[in-house]
Image 1 (spheres, helix red, strand yellow):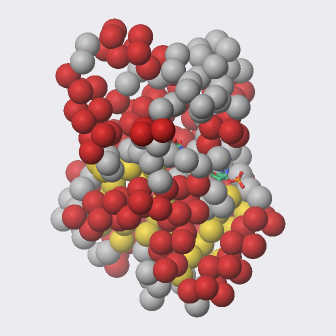
Image 2: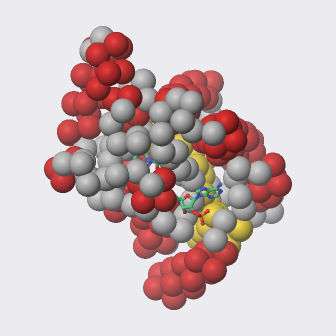
Length: 253
Ligand SMILES: NC(=O)c1ccc[n+]([C@@H]2O[C@H](COP(=O)([O-])OP(=O)(O)OC[C@H]3O[C@@H](n4cnc5c(N)ncnc54)[C@H](OP(=O)(O)O)[C@@H]3O)[C@@H](O)[C@H]2O)c1
């Protein structure tokens, strides 16, 4: 039986990964800050699917939290076969409206934690010659969109680069780039979501199904859903200035 560790497992996309991987028979390590929610989720997944669901409370905006997850990932006696770096959040406001503390917290969770946890997981996977890492980025990686877009662009570039460096090792590394997904993300950030047209919203469970298919196919970047595939193709061709004007203010205030 294989084990998957998911960060940000208590809500939204991370919870959808946990449901799907448990249904497929994987044991789980569930990581987030809210211990009560983690315990409830672990009990439910264990009871429903008969898998082991371990709880690891950690704040990935803190060195101590990142360190605790690094230690779990590098424990050779309890190997982790799939790492899903999913924890993340949005900050309301454009450049200079967001406090420096919040900007840095975002870089810590979206970039430093992803770098450190991937680096902790991969050596054991490489020795076993199997394993996978899914780093949840965003289609915002393809457009100028403040620190959020920049941090997700880092996730895509980092993942593609590491996948190239590990070619032939038997490991799969993939950046997942969703569009708008119905989760707690916008409400937590205090961002208005009612202006976003209903046809743009994705379902988290369907997103995860597409992501896992892309991982099995060996893709290094996954953009689930034809609407967002078209969007990311256009974003590569469109002038950066026009892209910036269109994306910079949308839904951020
Ligand atoms: N929803 C979208 O439209 C969308 C689109 C593209 C990409 N994404 C990306 O998808 C990922 C998941 O977002 P979501 O939409 O599923 O959001 P969500 O519903 O708000 O869930 C976020 C999860 O991350 C955890 N988390 C947040 N900060 C954390 C921290 N400092 N340490 C540990 N865990 C933390 C939360 O749990 P606790 O509060 O208990 O810690 C929660 O489990 C993020 O990386 C986000 O950037 C989302």
